[in-house]
Image 1 (cartoon, rainbow, N blue to C red):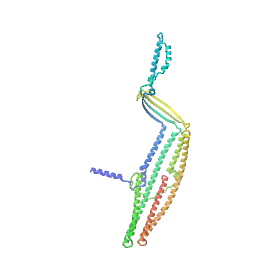
Image 2: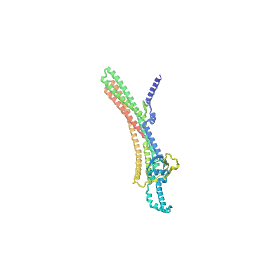
Image 3: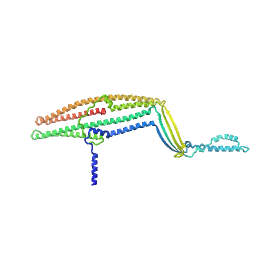
Amino acid sequence: MKFLYLLLIVVSSSSWLNAGLKKLTLPRALSILEKSNLEIKASKFEESMKYYDHIAAKAKKYGTLDLEYTALRSNDAGNVFGFKLQSREANFGDFGFSDFMNALGEGIMQSAQLDPNGLPNFGFFALGLAQNSDAILALEPADLNYPAPRNHFITKMTYKVPLYTGGMLKSYRKITKKMYEMSKLDTKKLFSLKRYELKKTFYDIAVVNNFIYNLNVIKRNIQRLKAVIKEMKKEGYALETDILEVDARLAEVEAMLNEARLNRELAYYFLSFLLNKKVDSVVAPKRDPRVPRVTKKIIEERSLDIAKAKMGLSITKDAIRVEKAKFKPQVGAFVEYGFADNRVVPISMKKDFWTIGMQAKMNVYNGGADRAMLEKAKANYLKVKSQLELAKKGLWLKAQKLKAEIRSLNYRVRSFKKQYIVATKVYKTYREKYKEGLVSITELLIKQSKQIEILLKLLKVKNDRNAKILALQDLINK
């Protein structure tokens, strides 16, 4: 019994997990889109990366503090002597003074033995030292040239900080901050695109639903016509071929219905992809999208493309400041503190050392490369400025074109609506005439084909108009 209860829970939970969104409205879908769309999520991660680039640029003004530990062992004469010197352990013996003192002692003994009175004679000693100075200086001290291997451990901290960079670091901080702001605009632009795709899909479904509804009406009319023909055939007023022609038309309408249902199913798949959630059904909009009010001022204030262009122009200004900073001096300071000993952990604070310093450098000549890069940055600023003006005029032109196309499509929608009403009335008239034997079944079906043809044109034009209206809304980020 317990097992059956657990099995029931598993089955019900799996069916709940597989359940999709039902009767999804457009406002709810838009709220889900911003939170769940995978492309938008990836774009937000890109935002985070740009933010950390800005944090890294800000950190450069605080300098760097490095902790360094070095372990060495060597019998190289220069290294060993340097190790002892850095550890403050060097003595005269390390210079080879033991060999020097031995030679000096022999000279003293020799000078003392030369005195006939048996007394030390330093005059003879000085004379002997002068005569043997070359030999003494030519000695190669073993302690200095062939030292025993020695360990050396250095622990030190170094702090470096920029004091003046000519405004270069400040400009870099501004650039990285604006790049972060631009990445947020990229996310908004992506969301605007996905919002357009979502809204268009909803209105596409509304058009398809309308098409399916009208096709079902036509299908029912054909089925009624078929029933009438069968009755007329019994009375001898219709032929078997009339029924066959009606069956062919019924099959054609059924095929169109299946295609429309498949297109709606594909639209649901696309919605599921956009929302990253399974969508089973939606509440299609009952009204057509509204044409937004668009002026030059509204475009300039709301267009994300213009906002990005303005941000890019500001970044190029900062880039000029970066290039100008190369003509100014760069000043920095550093402090170093550490310990050096032949032990891993020094046992005496006398083994420590410190160094402080400052460095200033300025490029005087590099063949004109910095000047060329500055002129390039200025040219790039002028280019981006021109692109900003071009974007403003281009978007206004695009808005004017979209508004003109929408007006044209509105006229065509009204025209096809009237044509469809007329075609439907003509079909009904011919159906009555067929019952009276005044027209053939072929003539009747031709009128019905015209009705379906106008219906298809009407729905296509409505779909095109909706797309233009949504594109105009997207232009002003609405």
